[in-house]
Length: 302
Ligand code: GUN
Figure 1 (cartoon, rainbow, N blue to C red):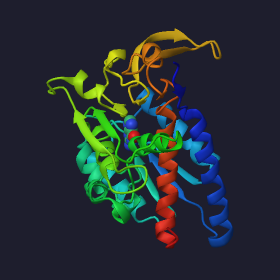
Figure 2: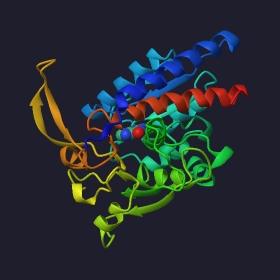
Figure 3: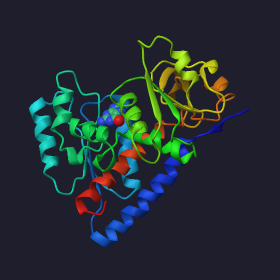
Figure 4: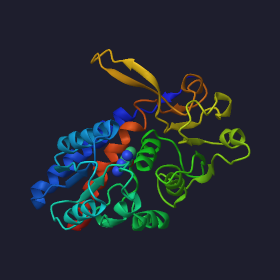
């Protein structure tokens, strides 16, 4: 059996079209568009490419977009002042501070300074708490977990009563997606197990999973014999395992590998996300959705 591929690249297109249409409608009715500021400190090449893509996507869906790129030696208090400026800017609905930040800056202090109502990454403790409570309380689900849940739902996978096993307990993926899948409501209602580096028998847990979500950052960690036949496998791993020359551009690009042994797993699973082209494209898409959501809350049309 060959699993159905859950393609993030295709789901991204569907969602970005939905967002574009909604932005147009809001602009006609209310005369405003969502505003997103990206703050990129320094010149980390990976961060530059992520932020460039975020900016390009914001343009595509019709957002107002501001880029602020202070140099790597900006003082912490100056970065805090910059955030304060955008917290008080009425045309800005989302503030994105690209991580990681330079060592001399306290990341937690910076993220906690963002107005929770503009925290479209969903990293502020207030939004983490809202997510935990669930239901109407949730404002900005963090982008990668939100993308994962969307992929599960749009692939037609039943979540209610499903055994969900999450491999990895990070604040950005493992903990929030586990929390989201156990909430009461559509696209959730699952029985959730979180496994991690100290779990005694990783394989045994994975074998029970109707939906297996792997965010461990270990290339090829999940072996085919750990996968329940017919299950849904979401591979969040994006591991750089080498470099190659792109056929399209002739430039050097990273060879990416997921946390799941894809070639073998696709013969057992019912559906599976590829790497690349799976969860990756969903993260920026969900950032756009959160920014739109922020404006809708402000306008009282959520
Ligand atoms: N760096 C890597 N991923 C992310 C993300 O989702 N948000 C932010 N702000 N920085 C990142």
